[in-house]
Length: 475
Image (cartoon, rainbow, N blue to C red; front, side, top):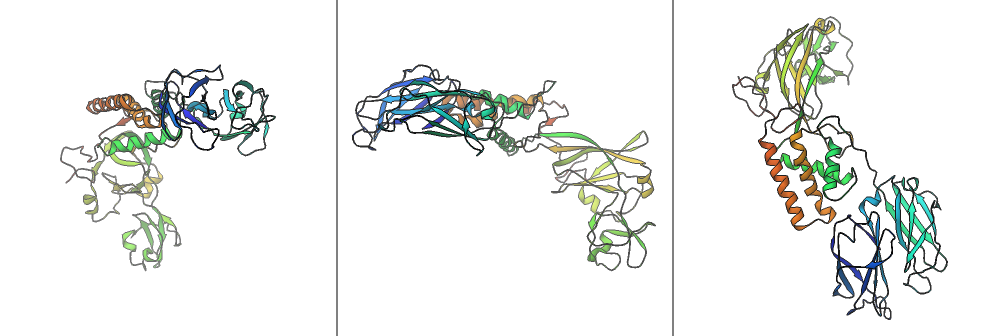
């Protein structure tokens, strides 16, 4: 049997079973086992912990951090009079790292004529198969430790697969078979400033729980959970981005009356919105224009006064209209004010903006830009959007964290991962307490760096005249 351990982290209750050699598979009770340990294929030494019996032939002892400071694997042999020998191999969590050579992979060979005794004096033949391919001979040869335990070094190339099957045979011995599921490790994104990226946060959190890897899928998923959990406590991490957007032409089509109609509200053309026979055409078009094209159903018609935004947009904080080298501030209004505008298709120099916060967010401009002004690039829209932090389980989300959130997130993630690494009691409690203290300190800071912030102005209250939950000032 085999299991995982974290280097230098003790296992409080390592459980093994002794089978009665005269009445298999019954457990042997009342035994006084002798337990010895081999670390990374070295000679066996006595375990430091005392063994106690639990029930039905099961026994337990504590493995100390020193006994578990092996880099790759630990072999455990338990012997008692009247019992079959118990053999266990533990593998260090980092030993399942894909694409990294593994020294001292420990395995067991059992005598096929005197099971479950270990078979000694072998020169095992080890073959490997990666990702379901045919088995091939290992690069290195296996060597004996003692008592049926053997070891072998596996090369980087041999461990460059997602799944690695290991098969070992020897004369007079049962075959040893093992399957390793190797983690694909991502390289951290290193920054040239004092900020830490997503992978840096994960790497430092893993180090705090005794894992020397730079990334695991589970840690990335847990970071995503930590970020979303903060939102339930009204701590919103977000990023502010400055965007420059050009205006696009409004679509022009020819109505059934042969006149030109201009789109002022984006829509997919259909029978019910076709000018002028469709019942809803006035909600999307007005009679104007000179370059209308023939009507075709199923076409996406655009409006110069509507700009689609990325779905992770939370809000628009400010906006200006640039004309030549002159910037004029655009007033951000709310949905009620925008809907109250009677002639939304009016054209001219834009002065108002409404941010529609939906699953497919949009900016609505009033007045809309004329076709000539779009053609001549008279205006560009500059705005600052509040971007929701992305899904941290995806590898492309690598932007930096503001300095005040680095330590809280590292400690929060480490505390959340602790249970996966058998960390309990005071150590976990200290991690959680420090994480909460660092989080509280970060929330009291008022550092605006242009990266992550914690309390975006969802009301858009630029003018000191109040706001509502829809964004923009109230008139």
